[in-house]
Image (cartoon, rainbow, N blue to C red; front, side):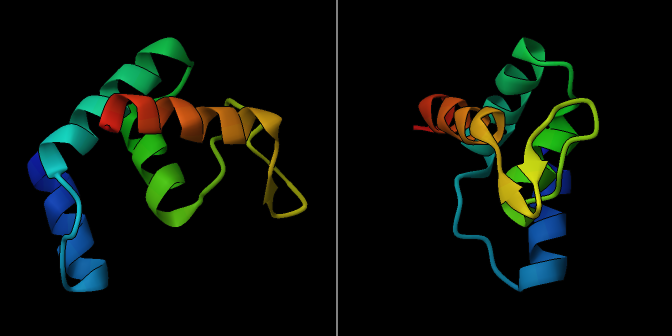
Length: 79
């Protein structure tokens, strides 16, 4: 998922963008390389908290240990 697509998604759904889109694109790509997921799946997991099908990120609507670890990895690349 490219930065322009992320920007459009955030504008369409939230009306504003408060994130650094270039850093978000980089973080999504790097995290997706380390795991069997696409950058779009990582983006939707971080923004909408949607489960990633190929990973065990949620259990009963809450993040699992793997889901929390994925968020921490994303933060390391983003910041």
